[in-house]
Image (cartoon, rainbow, N blue to C red; front, side, top):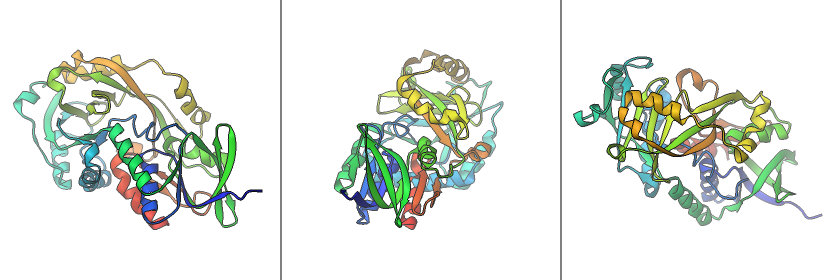
Length: 370
């Protein structure tokens, strides 16, 4: 019998966080294997999102999340400069009704965390419905090009000699004489590798691996999320807008397609479930073959009440993904990282970043775990 290949670290999941963890550990001199079920890296949640690099503005009800974004924002810009898109103006508008923060509360919060903002110019405020919008602020926020980010991480994986296996699904893990055995499936055939440590970075599928391995699952909430890809009218071509804080919307540049995403707190989710539900095991496979009816018209109908010019948008496509959050985040809209060590097995660690600027917090935890 041929002995299974042995690694110091196996990382499961080839999204932004999985790739970043693999690179960081390989830079420490570790022998790392990265497994990804798809035929390319960064094709799921790392691509199907708003492409927003947070700077604290989005979380005026969570001091910790906002502060971590403020701290991580300049680091992200520096380390991923070639992927950053900052050639657009960014505005946050506070609604007069149904907002969970007032304009004064928003301003005070941002001053507290050191996030720069100033009143938007008259040419911008005139675009909004004054009856519904209390105040508009100019802020500092950027976007990233998901395709350039993929290329950059692919090169970093090569440079650090991480072994990458695509089209490879981690079926289960098990204890193996002080190490961890990982059963991998590729082209219908199974093989087994052994690692000192395993990092489960599969985002919405974290519990799938745990359940298949007979291990306790983590409490997670999921949403089937749609973001419409739209062509905006000329005055908004180089503009991003977020109306908050509550059941409102965002229009953000999506550089990888040369379009904007339109997302709405009420209409982007097409359904939600927790990992106690059987649906959580089937939705990923469902999305591969199916697309639900779009909620674009409902998104647009509400959004253009606040910013009438959006009525001239043209939908080109939609991005679909499973969005996963910690249930506790529903109370204050926080986005802490999930880093759970020894998830049923010693040295099996589960990782979820929630938003892209959290990567530095994740890497700090990974460094402490090895």
